[in-house]
Image (tube, rainbow, N blue to C red):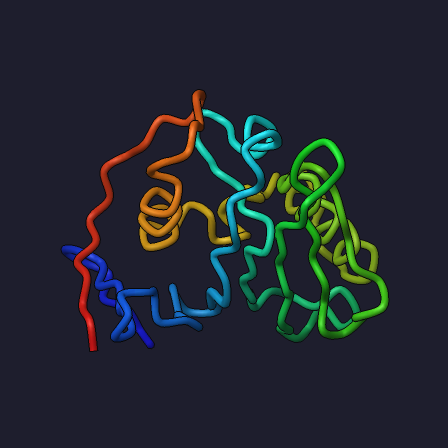
Length: 172
């Protein structure tokens, strides 16, 4: 499903009112699962002032391949439940037996970029550019923010500061 960009996102829902997934968020990015909130005893480790991370969150993003940098491939991006907080795993379809896992989404995507740089002729200026891991995981997308905020409404995320997002619901 392609969602309109302006002036407001349309969040498609099934007859039970749940988000209709998978959902195409933008060109090359698809949301498969929003995940589930961690237990209340672990919740403090699964949010920051700007983001909430639900274990089980899954997106698939198209990006330059780590194996053949002249081609795009799909990367499965997952938030997993770690011992002390979320883990961010990225699995490239070109090398599925070598997932990249980190406790920081920026670091996970930077490791992807570094692997691409090793097999490409990217200029040094490209190698210094930092990737926003939360953006690459799709966590900055308004539809994702809306779904997470609606799911966590009753939770005690003390540090998180909710933001207003432009989303209209559509049940079909």
